[in-house]
Length: 432
Image (tube, rainbow, N blue to C red):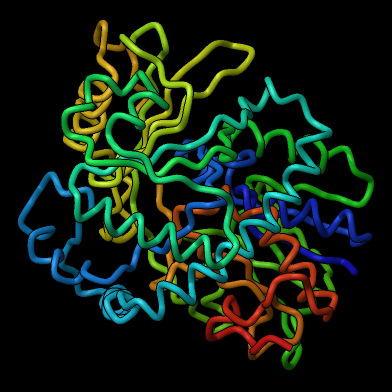
């Protein structure tokens, strides 16, 4: 089939790669000048296959008033007149119950395991040092006993669902596992250790995927493509056209896949489709290993502050990727200096800064999140040949290769190894 994939972030690139491998002819389209220039550019760099619990959780609604009043809260909401965001927020609060959390966790664990398998096969053909890829384990630390107790309950749930081996650690065991956390030791109540979690530079992975796609005879890559238009007949899309270098280019197709992350709804608007996706804004900085008093060996997540620390080591040296926050503030990509200062203080508090870094490389991006945490993967209900692969929230890097395999199953009309039902969110066609 001739398939257009719209979006060249990690999800779109891995989707194009999977479809090429299944024998299709692919046209990859993105407005950016190159691969992975949106949310994939500077994400948290963690491949958290075992830690996929949705953001919506029991008890979270009671914290909302405090979030609105606390400017330093890792979760921030901005009052808006946007009815879509209000509906998303209402659906998010409805998803904050144990039944939904267990349903979403089971589905995400299955998808994450499929993603681990698919990505490992691809990584085996790459140069790990160029991608900063390592299997270094992940330690999630909790600052209060109630948070740690909740994490232990989640660990027990994931163990029942067949997730990766995980272990609960007390304060002393956390410090023994990761001595670089010595400065933070006094406030640690406990932690969850997952030995087989991984890190990689998502932008480098995107570039490597792009190189492979460009070299393939059945793939055409169109970057800098603007003003996308759909050309339809009845319930089928027959072609797309885009402005490319000032000229309109028409692309005939048999199917189209929208994998444009937080921009997916803008792409789908002309087809009268709207996914339950809202942009959750996050921030990141990078700190060189030489600027730190201690450099961690494992990935660290500070659960209370919603901040992740990913130690990246590649052929250019070692650096700490620090990312966090979740702001429901619409499409605002402005970098808030106060948030960057929060991340810098968190680095100093956790590992110690020997000196102020010359350039923190401050960045902000929009994660395409659904209320339940379940991405939208499948065929659009009103259209026979339009498919969607979007809405992965903070797990886009982790779930990308598995989601690509799910999408390929949907196009081939075959039953995959992971149940497609949980990801067939309206307005997508029901699985099967």
